[in-house]
Amino acid sequence: MLKIGDQLFQSRLLLGTGKYPSFEVQKEAVRVSEAEILTFAVRRMNIFEPTQPNFLEQLDLSKYKLLPNTAGAKTAEEAVRIAKLAKASGLCDMIKVEVIGCDKTLLPDPVETLKASEMLLEEGFIVLPYTSDDVVLAKRLENLGVHAIMPGASPIGSGKGIVNPLNLKFIIEQSSIPVIVDAGIGSPKDAAFAMELGADGVLLNTAVSGAKDPVKMALAMKMAVEAGRLGFEAGRIGEKEYAAASSPQEGMVTS
Amino acid sequence: MTIQLNGLQVELPESVRNVEDLLKHYQLEGRIVIIELNHEIADKSKYTELSIADGDKVEMIHFVGGG
Image (cartoon, rainbow over all chains, first blue to last red; front, side):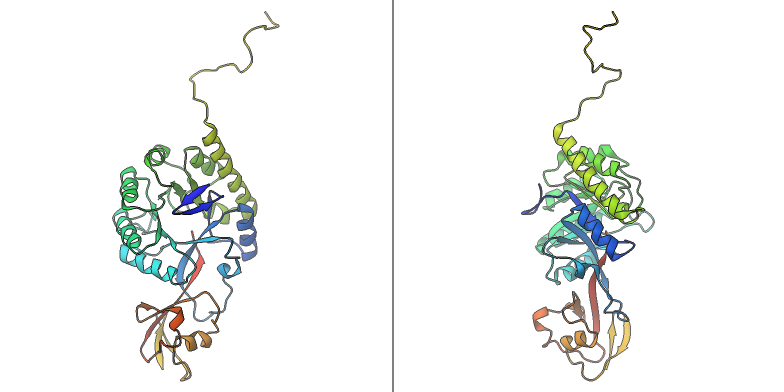
């Protein structure tokens, strides 16, 4: 079970809701993923088409926990404003702190992320900051009291997978709060790898929504997260330089 | 009356007097929408009390797909 704040979740897969080919595909992908936490962005309505359908309104909200992000924020103050708008919906108390510091790489601004997290904790939010895979920053965020830490595997939407497994491992080992690997996951092997490293969860979006068959990929990601977690709990064997036979060395019929 | 809605100048009929009227005008009753009026988040329970006046800045916010 994944525990964030005082809430328990069966699923360790958190799913983003952006860039699906259609609402129908998205609904089915969300269903088969068995994700319980879904991320959303906070945006202005298109006032010329205010009545257009909205994915969130098609969900059974009793089944899902909403995790709005502060995407679009470049400062702590902007992130806090977006978080407060999201909370005013009355639908959520969790917030994914996302303060981007570089338009090209979409890497988070560590200073503003830290500041925003502190301000949002004071406002009583359940705070999940999206961060770079910096080990010391992760500790600083944990010391503030954030409820989970979400280091990126590689740049958002890049699909490059886990580029620095060592840093992620260090973050996971030192952390006493959940570590959710967020951003950059490309394929099921990346999700399984994150879980094998000991991550408490994986958050991904484009890897599913941008797949040729998003529904099938959603199922693959669910299974990869489960397999990776089981593998981590089971404890993998150590690596050896040379072979070690699996069959007995005694009673060989060839000798 | 002219207000600034989501960064655009819009003309509203005289019948729109408060936040609730504004939502009705845009057929948004019962929808998931958050209103910010002159930089203050509008309390849902006070939509009828929060009057809209000429020159007000209003933001209509909702949730969209995102990661």
